[in-house]
Length: 90
Length: 267
Ligand SMILES: [Zn+2]
Image (cartoon, rainbow over all chains, first blue to last red; front, top):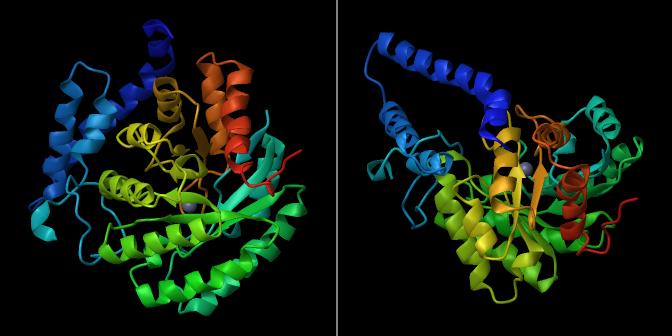
């Protein structure tokens, strides 16, 4: 596809999601109390958007992933939260 | 349009969903065994569930003219209890002869624990002993990358397992490459919030090719869309992909993989 037609198809959708992210960060700023590790993880993942190679989606996903390789001794629960809290929680 | 829904948890869907899928062009639905949203109290709960998947649900689907197939296992979310898992795994062989059973699935990992991995290896052994196809669930969100690597290692460590008889489901941009490079099939799951959107699914198809890839909705009791596959086909049309290319991805590819079990036939 041409870049022009990709913009025609997806610009408005991406623009809307971009503003949603901006508004989310504003909302967090206006909130009270200390945020947990997810906010730092989110900001770090945002940096991945600055790269010039077309692997940003992969980089964002990796940035939010558990990078360790060994199985853990016991499940802390059943759910996932969307960002890796770091080694200290295991 | 015609398509296969290779991964749908129909026991948690309504008859309206069956009707909508038929109208959209669905020609067969395949239902892997999974978590009910709560832990079952014992092996009897799984026995009843396997009866539902192999007897009641295919009859319900048949009322809409939709062939229904299934996969059996204890899902990774309930695999932390290895005693329960062993009891459930011992129930499976007597169901493998049921006419709509395609293989062992969806097995895999959830939180990437030692016990989950042990139970995954037991399922891989079960599949190898009974020469069954394998459908693998990869973990959610932050656990997916690590879990996918552990799963591929476990499958590749068993020399009886042929990668082209295993599908690794719920791949995303950070896991699809390693799955395809190792010779496995890759499933792309379309969810409203987690996993992938139709646009990202088509991106992956364009970047990695559609040789060993299928699309599925994995519709269940959570926020999910039983029409996600045909909606993604429409997304492909919007990008100018031909009807033939679309048919290959949403209809012929699942048949190529699932047809390795002669029980899987579609009109
Ligand atoms: Zn599933």
